[in-house]
Length: 236
Image (cartoon, rainbow, N blue to C red; front, side, top):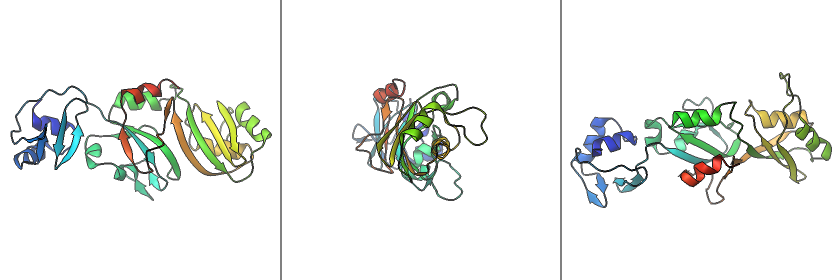
């Protein structure tokens, strides 16, 4: 693939803009500046690395990202009341069409996946795909066995005709609930907690499938999701 096409597919602007970046000697391959936009390079996924303005990037056919979402951000390109989570990412990702894989409320924190692979996004947002998600909620009132049993057995949410049950529910301490659900209904975890007689004061997603939020990833930070991480999603 020629260098202009490499930059274009990776979100560095229009073809004309990518050609200008190269012509202005702002692009390097293997540590050497390349000013030939038509120069060809092998693009095995993840193997090719290039630099733009001194920042190194891996070539990826598709972007799979993991973000530690902080509170106060909306999972939308057109946010209504808060900043967009896309403001936490380099602009190249928005340029190449990365989107959220499911959504977290603006006040919910934790593990958020993003990708420009439409098949992947559909796979993990389809209601038919039963992927367990682990949330940790801070509750207003102390938890008790009756509430935990109700969550495991199923609670009827307002406007629903069938109860929603947690795959797992246990108290980490009197006000900290670990809840695993398979569905992704609107405000589901908060509504389930309310339905069992308590109130959710804060909510954090720790895990999707077998993929856990890395303890070293700071709020607002992102990282590439590698093959091991992608495999973990299916192992939970």
